[in-house]
Length: 202
Image 1 (cartoon, rainbow, N blue to C red):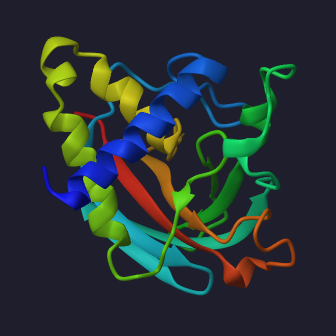
Image 2: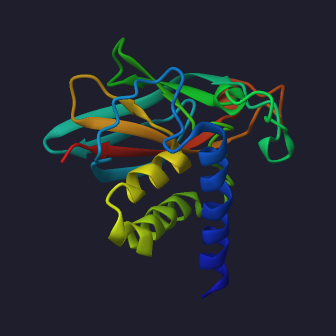
């Protein structure tokens, strides 16, 4: 097994048990809608976005343009060294939220990261490929062949439950984010960069 794949598997092994221990399989979201079906759906786009930019997605005859209007960041601790044993709901309160404007209209979608924040956005030119590789690893995992719920549970544990874009077949998930309130408490919305995943109902 090459070093890159081993590193991804270590990331998966670190994150999956963490969510399962503190929050139960599925890592319930405190504010986003929780209507995640038994099927995540088809992944139609993985893209980067920062404040001041926009991204257009075209799928199934629909065009959706995303732009960031605001960010709310409560990731003010390092969860890997924080003791949540006396506060089982603690990790679910540690999240970053991005508010996305849809098609330059008044419609705003609020997307929550997984508990304890999204995976860290490195801005090294490989962030999108990293997310695609993680998804491919989940799809090819032996457990996925024997358990139809494995992919959904593992995907939600890595990327949160996402948010439905009303009146469309699409759902959007936050895969990566940077900075965090923990490592840059004086960050403004202009400093934040994200990787998002858009899926569509089958």
